[in-house]
Length: 300
Image 1: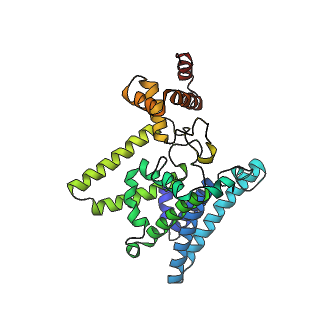
Image 2: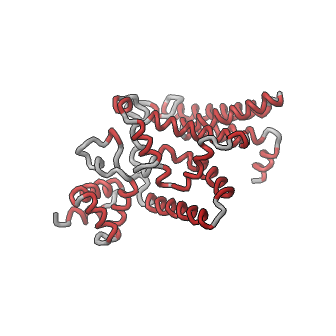
Image 3: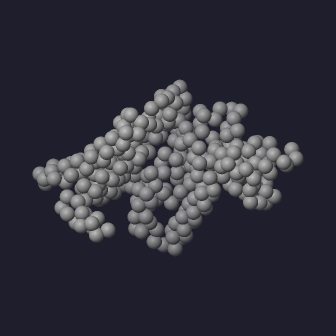
């Protein structure tokens, strides 16, 4: 901690640390890291052009490139290519297929943002970040905040336009999980300024509690199975189970209290045959042998 504090206290320490983190983000999640790195680069470039001092920009870029080179070297040692292994082979997330070309963009965007897999329906507190992301009060914001907001919008648009499924076996819209810290930052700032009356604080508390509830249900099976767009054609077990919150809640409630109100309501909603069919899929996915044995032994 002392060494880190000393490093950041140096004149070039913070730009260098930012470059290292941007490079690390790129290695972890290429689209997310690319947008964050580009936004950071624009921020340091604009500062350099104003002051005619390029040291910060060089430190940022040099450390970022160095981190990327390190990752490329490790990839080459591990499997013989400088790019991550998940970029090789067809049928991946960004496969330009007929499904991607023919998707209903408005429907897909609604499902990913506000619908069955929506980041805002699962974490409604993040809705308070929308004024910032829509550009309200943009000129009053600091350059780092502008860079963060622009990167968040860019990442969101990239995944809405470039994907046609919802993140594989995942709870909610997995691709936008990396932007949640930015959404919470802007939402917290908005809350401190605007949510000051008792009624507004009550709304804020309700939004936060919904997020806590959805997070708790999500922790049951973060990689749950549910509707995956073109990967769930009619006839598949996940075609009719479109909401990953309800899917997790069904499996959790049936495991803990199969005769309880929540489990029975969801079974009636989906139909007993479809619900049991899904439970077999869900417990197979989580490798819950005890529940699979119970389902198989139950009278049909």
